[in-house]
Image 1: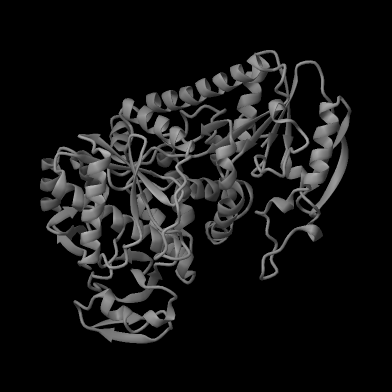
Image 2: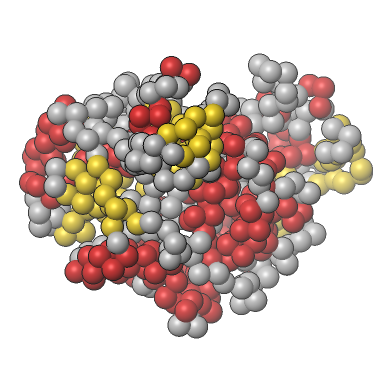
Amino acid sequence: MLRITLPDGAVKQVAEGTTFAEIGKAVEKRYDSPLAVAVLNGREYSLRQPVMEEGDVDFIPLRSVEGMRAFTRSLTFVCIVAMKELFPDTEMEVCNSLGSALYCIMPKNPLDHGQMKVLEERMREIIEAKLPIEIVPVGREEAVAWAKQDSYLGEDVLGMINMAPESERLFAYELCGVRAPFFEPLLAGTEHLSAFEIIPFEEGFVINYPELEDHTVLPPWDTARRINRAYKDAEDWSAMVGCNTIAKLNRIIREGRPDKIIRMAEGLQEKKFVAIADHITAHRDKLKFILIAGPSSSGKTSSNQRLCVQLEVNGLHPIPISMDNYYVNREDTPKNPDGTYDFERVEVIDTALFNEHLNRLIKGETVELPYFNFITGHREYRGETICMQENSIFVIEGIHALNPKVATSIPDENKLKIFVSALTPMSLDAYNRIHTTDLRMLRRMVRDARFRSHDALETIKMWPSVRRGEENYIFPCQEDADIFFNTSLIYEPAVLRKFAVPLLQSVPKEEKAAYYTACRLLRLLHLIEPLDEEAIPNNSILKEFIGGSAFAREL
C-alpha cells in the first residue's frame, strides 16, 4: 500500500497499481473543469499512469494554463496519428504558437488543402470515438534502439534519453497503434478534444484550439500573423547552422564548439540592428520617434541601447526615453479586484503627459523629463531636459509603447514601431517545442534574483499576472509593429541553466503550485548541457539578465 495526501489534505492508502484517474474520481468535483493531468511530489503524470511512490497528489484541470498545454499536446498527437495513417510519407514538425493556434509545417511531402481537410476529418473520427491515450513504459535499451531506427526523430530523442537521469522511468504514448515520445504528459483520452480545426497557413497549417476560458469553445483565428515571419526566420537560420534542437546544442557544447555558435548568434543580431539603423537613417527626414515595445524579459532595454549605438555610427543623435518614468503616482495606479496594484495595464502610464511631451518635442521645444522613483512610488523632476537637435531621433522603450493610446499626438509617418520578443527556435524534437514564455520566465527569474532581490518563488508567483497583462495589453498591439525583432539566442538555454537551476531548487515544496512549476522547468533544464558565459560579448542582450552588460549603467 502507498500513503498519499489528497488536495483537500486527506490521507489515503492506495494499492500499488492504482492509477491517478482512479484517485481523481474522489476529488474531481473540486475543480471547475475535467482533470487534465496529475501532479505527484511536484511532477506531472498522465491520469492513466499508476502511482509509483508515496507523497502529495494534486490535479491540474483543463481550465488552466498547464491543462491547456496538455490539451494542445494531446491534440497534436491525434494529428500525428491521423497523418501517419493517411499520409505515412509526410513528415510533420510542430513550430510555434500563433495566438490560440499551433503552427505546423511538413518538411517532407507537404499536404494540399484537400488532403488537410481529409486529415481533419480523420482527427474528428478519432476524437469522437473517445479513445484512450495509453502510456507505455519503455526500457532504456528499447528506447535507444527505437531512437536509432527513426531517421526523423531519432537523433533528438536519443539526445534526450542520454541526458535523462538513469533513475528516470521512460514512457511513450500510444493511440491507434501509433507510438510517440512526449516530454510532458498527455490527456487520458480523446473525449475532450472536439473543439479544433485545421487551417492551411503559409508553408503548412495551424491547429486552432480553444482559449483558456473554455475547452469546448473554438474562437475564430485571425490569419493576419505577421509575427510568424520572425519565428520562421529564426527557425530557418538555426536549422541552417545545425543548432535547432537541444540535442544538437548539447553535442556542440560537448564537442567544445560553443564559441562559434555564440559568435554566429550574436553576429546575426548585430546584423539586424545595423539593418534597422540603416533603414531609419535612410528615412531620417520623416522618422523622429522610434517606439520599442515587447513583453516582460524580451530584452527591450538592451535592444534600445544596441540600436542607439548603430544610429550613432550612422551619424544620428539618438535620445533614449524610458516610458517607465511616466508612471502615474502610486496612489493613482489601477487596482485588481482584490485590491492589489495592477502594474500591467496601460493606465499605469500618464499618457496625457507623455503625448504632451512628444508634441512639444516635435515642435522643437525643450522638455524636462520626469523621473519615477520606484522606492517612493512618485514622479520626480531632477532637471534633465531634452530637445530636438540636428539629426536627433527619440528612441522610446516601454511595454506599452505600441498601444494606440501612446504617441497619438505624433503622425504615423514620423514614428517607427518595433516589437521585440524572445521567440525561441529551439525545440526538443519535431513534436516537443520549448515554450517562449518559459524562456522569458527563466530570463526574468535570473535577472530578478541578481539585480532586484527577488527569489524564484516570487518571480513564479507574479508570472500569471504578468502573462495576463501581456495577453490583454501587449500582444494585441504586436501586429501594428513595422518591424519584429527576435531577441532570443540559440545558445541561451545552456547559459540560463547555470543560473536558474539553483534558484529553482530553492522553491519550497509547501508552495505547491510554484514548486510544480519549478520542478517542470528543472526537468527541462536538466536535459541541457550547461554552458559558461565567458565567451558572451558584453553587449549581448543576454547580459541584461545574467549580468556584466556594457550597458549596465543604462539598464
